[in-house]
Length: 199
Image (cartoon, rainbow, N blue to C red; front, side, top):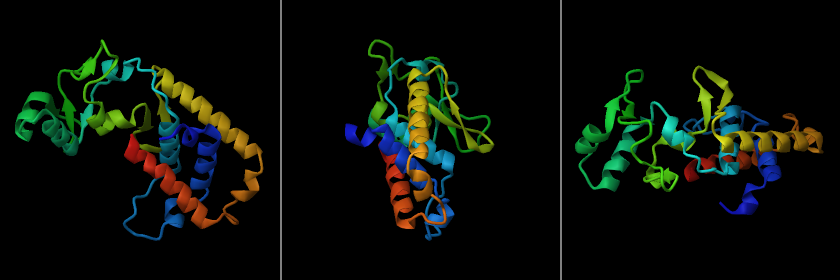
């Protein structure tokens, strides 16, 4: 993503527009994925996040969850059969059916402490991609900002300040749900959703 697209004010404006209507109000397609306002906040955070490469997520994450498609990508990358990758690198998650966990973590087997980074960054599991802006299980209207991640704390502060600044400006009347342009809302939602493809 280009740096000009990561401007906090622009992202705050997108977020305010995207959350002016619910997905149910904005999208008529029945099969379109539905996200909450908090999901859009997380998307905005991911656009603004500047990772400090501290390695906290790789060295403290327990468990590191994998979806079946994450395991398939790992096997393909390592050029080994999926069953071998599953046996060597994963265990079933005891709490969630159909979900796998990396074994041999703390730190993650794929963390490179010398380079302060992930050896499989481009195909890291979904749980790693969405870190550090995690939802709180059982609550759709809260985000847990991981205090041990300096990038997440910094990002949330920047975003919330930009949102507050935009709210104080001329946008309150422009984003009133009675007068909001549904096409602008859909466009904002789609632009934020595209962040999911890039994380």
